[in-house]
Image (cartoon, rainbow, N blue to C red; front, side, top):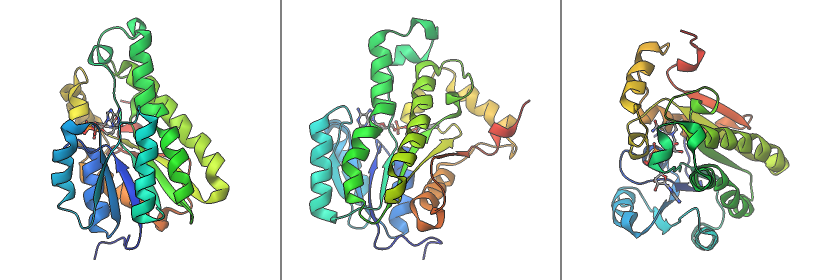
Length: 257
Ligand SMILES: NC(=O)c1ccc[n+]([C@@H]2O[C@H](COP(=O)([O-])OP(=O)(O)OC[C@H]3O[C@@H](n4cnc5c(N)ncnc54)[C@H](O)[C@@H]3O)[C@@H](O)[C@H]2O)c1
């Protein structure tokens, strides 16, 4: 048995694009712990790949959800309600910015690029929570993924840093709003991991090398370390934790030099 048992728990995970996605590591670990999962894919292009991954889990279902489309969000949770009845967790592991906005001068970010990055990477949590919360009849845990660029300057991260700052604020505001209903909200602030999204960030490999040199543990983190923290946060063992940003970064954030 897995060290934390999620048997009988059900939840939704958004953000699997391929087997390197942080969302996939989380799905694998939560699935192994006994949870029943609904995985989503963004656009038909990803359907087959996500379905193939989901087939390696027990009883997972796969549904479309583009987070910019309110109808798809509503349809997602309607199907989840039919299939699962209630849920106890939601994992939001999605982000997007136009490539040209992840390099160069931040001051030159266009209106549309700013809107897109903030809408997909931060706003999207709100409509998802609106539909997920009524299914969390016995409390629940909502988890999102952030990065330290919300607090400190990472050249090249630009508007995604703005989006992560907004996302971290949402976690606190939602933790307050849903606290009485026993629904908890937390973010994992992960160290750099080589994924599809990370590849779009200018200078990403140098950032990864720098993290490994400077971090207290003198190495980069693994996706499994993020997933194990997600397992804890989606379980009742973390019942006293809400509104928090939890760094899983090998101790990078404590270092001044
Ligand atoms: N990789 C890292 O170094 C790192 C570090 C800290 C935080 N994060 C965060 O982790 C999360 C997951 O990213 P990842 O690194 O696993 O990369 P990834 O590319 O595997 O995942 C990003 C996901 O966002 C989804 N997405 C983008 N636009 C969407 C939309 N409109 N609707 C629905 N889904 C959409 C993509 O389909 C994809 O599944 C992101 O929030 C990212 O910012 C990543």
